[in-house]
Length: 296
Ligand code: ATP
Image (cartoon, rainbow, N blue to C red; front, top):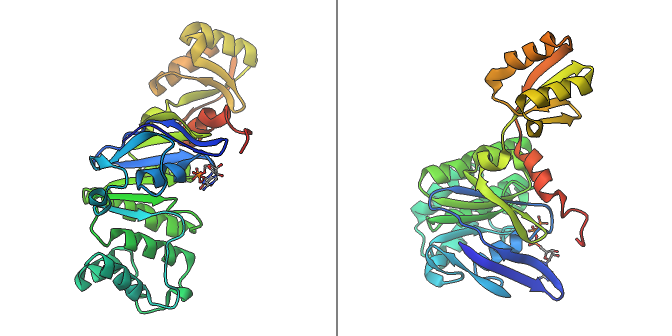
């Protein structure tokens, strides 16, 4: 949880008055364009960067508190790995600092799908394998909270699916996951709630369904202006918009037949009628549009 969390670097404000709330047991997706302030916020949550203003609490303790950090697993930016050690020895080396058992190392290798490659030197790992080993590092201490900065960055489609399934399984085990991502499709599928950052400010926070918003019926009818007018009069002007894909009518999908009848009875020609779900990507661009093209 953060209150008015702010960080400036010189004259630039990277994070500006951010209030986020991550609830226990949920997967929270932190969204934002490059430079929006996601990493800086995560670093402040972990006590790696000091806020200029405001505060953050993590697992009920002030950000950076060692007792909270002991219950938190972190993957921020590139995982720090020893390239000349094997995957297993990297985990063992990390485990030595945190008094993790050999058995736990094996469990983690299994969880991240690296048991078969455990003896290979990390220098020979693919990006996806290194990323999974990084997640394994974060998991070693059996943390309650996982903070993962862009865990799917640079992964191929199979790697993305693997990572997504792993993250879902962490939540199923009762862990809380805070992840940042540009991959909106991924976030759409695995997150319970999201926060959208634009230019350092939190512009939206809510469940994925809330942020995504409702879909619309896309209608192709001619003449289009007459059809749009008629639908506006019938279903409310605010619910009808001209869209590059047709006339978008925000109504219950069950009303498709009614929409069709209204138009046909008025002598208008209907050539297509289809339901279009909104995606998180639609909302993301709307929410961040006002700030794109700014100083960053
Ligand atoms: P990305 O998706 O590219 O990782 P992000 O949302 O994580 O972006 P941040 O890395 O938090 O964004 O950066 C936010 C802003 O703060 C950027 O303009 C960045 O240049 C700036 N910034 C971050 N760290 C520093 C620093 N140590 N010194 C100066 N500026 C910084």
